[in-house]
Amino acid sequence: MSKLSQKHLLGIKNITKADIELIFETAQNFKDVINRPIKKVPSLRDITIANVFFENSTRTRLSFELAEKRLSADVINFSSSSSSVKKGETLLDTVNNILAMKVDMVVMRHSSVGAPHFLAKHIDANIINAGDGTHEHPTQALLDTYSIKEKLGSLQGKKVAIIGDILHSRVALSNIFALQKLGAKVMVCGPPTLLPKYISSLDVKVELDVQKALHWCDVANVLRIQLERQQIKYFPSLREYSIYYGINKKMLDQLKKEIVLMHPGPINRGVELSSDAADSHHSIILDQVENGVAIRMAVLYLLAGATG
Ligand code: CP
Image 1 (cartoon, rainbow, N blue to C red):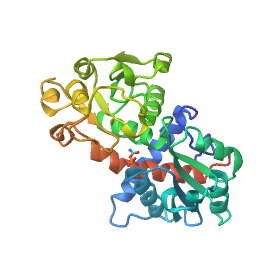
Image 2: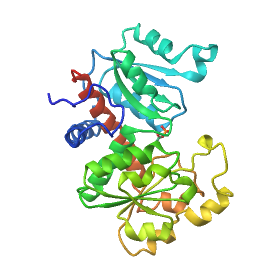
Image 3: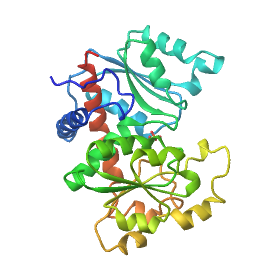
């Protein structure tokens, strides 16, 4: 079996183009499996996986759980809101207690940047980062780039605009790394207050005008305004944000070109995307969700075979 170069999947920054291509190839096989009448394979039947979520999630958590069950792994789920974290237990104690139950892999979402990297230094199990604060969300970037490849045939030379709240987005950073490794050209677009200062060091185009970004790109990946991470006001109101940065179907139709519309979810309908755009023929948002299961099956399967 081919293996990834890493024992953990902590981010896209430190994996190779060959790793990404291996994940895509493996995901393609699993996509065929999950579209068969019998959707399950025995690949991980000796493996126990803990989904440890210290932050809310719908897509990522369900997608990982389904991927694990499709691979016949034993699965346990942990949610901080109903756990002894509320009684003051530390992250390391919590995870070590879970591992004492003979868990092989940990899928973790945490609000703190670097939480999965910290764990990886202290425990033996394979760690998969399911989103750490504003830092990285590697499986989201893998399913996003896989979905673009599926739609357009290749990433090489394709123009991808990431539009919205770049400052607070872990999806943006992981997507930038993945798109660049796969040969795409990347633009970020949003209000100046929602563009991080370090963005110029990432070799991406920066655009403040959403119309210009839409004219430039083959793919628009639209991000949510992450109000839960905003302690100060970065723009006057959601209504004003929607007027200047919201995307509707008329704007897409008027481009008179093929454009692929993406969103990692959850969508704030009427803020960054109108319903008629989100549900239009331009959108591959639900394809992204479908591909998420195959991508996560591939990551779990390949990491289970990694020696570290
Ligand atoms: N895309 C994504 O991470 O969604 P969830 O927060 O619902 O997992």
